[in-house]
Length: 178
Image (cartoon, rainbow, N blue to C red; front, side):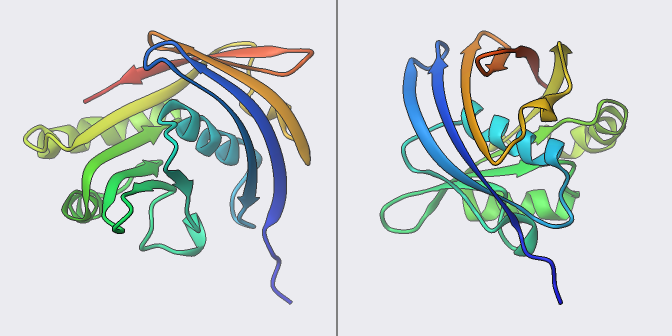
C-alpha cells in the first residue's frame, strides 16, 4: 500500500514591510512522503516571501512538470514559477519558457553555494530568473514549529524573515544570489 501525503493546517499572519503586503492565511500543506518537515517549511517560507493573492501551492514533488508554487493569470498563463532546491539548467530554461518570472529558493548551505557557482554563468543573461537562499541565522531549526495545526506569524523586512508562534521565533536571512 502506498503511503499518502501528510496534511498540515497552517494559520499564519504575514506582514511584509518590503512590499506592504499584509494578510492572514489559512493554508493546507501536503507533505509528500519523500519530503521531510524542514523542506515543507521552506516551501512555506517561499510562499510567504512571494505572497500574492493568486499564488498557489501545486502538486509539487508528485508532479514533476509543476513547480512548488505558481501564480497564474485568470486566463491560465503562468506569471510566476517558484522552485525550491537546486534545479538543473534544463528545468530552469523550461520554467523560463513557460512563465514570465522564475524564482528559485535554495536552503542547503554547502550544496547551494556549489550549485550556484556551477549554474550562475549560464543564467546571467536570463533576466526572468532570480535565485534566493534561505539562511536560518537565529534560533533554528526551521522545523521546530511543525505540528498538525500551526498558528504562526511572519514578518519580512529588508533581507530578513522572522517566523514564530506564541512561544518562540526564528530569524531567516534571505540572500539574493541573482
